[in-house]
Image 1 (cartoon, rainbow, N blue to C red):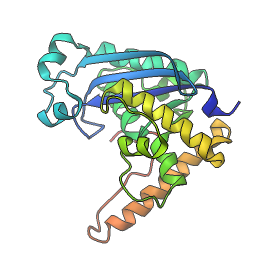
Image 2: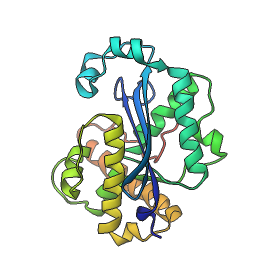
Image 3: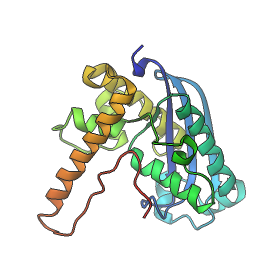
Image 4: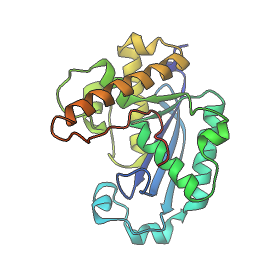
Amino acid sequence: MTWWKGPLTGFDLETTGTDPEESRIVTAAVVDTLGGRVEGATNWLIDPGVPIPAEATAIHGITDAEARTHGRPAAEAVEEIARALHQRLAAGRPVVAFNAPYDLSLLDAELRRHGRPTLADRLGGPVTPVVDAMVVDRALDKYRKGSRTLQRVCEVYGVELHDAHEAGSDALAAVRVAVALGHRYPQAGDLPLDELHRRQIDWYRTWATDLQAWLRRKDPAATVDPRWPLKAAS
């Protein structure tokens, strides 16, 4: 069975900001599917322990008051999220994300913040297998014009996104985009998972190198981190 027809686990975070080292998790979702069909889902609402900026609330809709009143303590919740992902990765079940270096790096930062083992610590090695729908789409439809937001990519592949920036909806949409990519592009869909993972490392590095070169036309000091699926801790 090709990977995109089998068990997949979508993962998404909604957070306080855009910096994976400094931002905190507000909501999270782990969605188990068989292909694109939902088998089960777990969602978390978390008290991040810091104020949620108004611009973040405008995106995901969670206010400070809601998070403080109804959210789980961050240390407990991030441990549960890490256990859920570790269980699936250790069993060889792919974790699917859209822009994995953000979500996985932010989770690692939260785990370190609360004195918990990272995913790599738990696995005793690299965090794999990961399927990043953004990376695969960008590599295999390189010259398509327009934005690469999840909403736009869903439109391209005919995936319905019911509630953008709700973690469960985004996690499921990432899975369904990955399934659509696997179906459309045999050069990704027919690969064994370990080889697909390696290809994504290369694809992301190539994209980052090209983007950095373009940015340096105006800013000679511009840097784009080429590491995938996780950024190293600063």
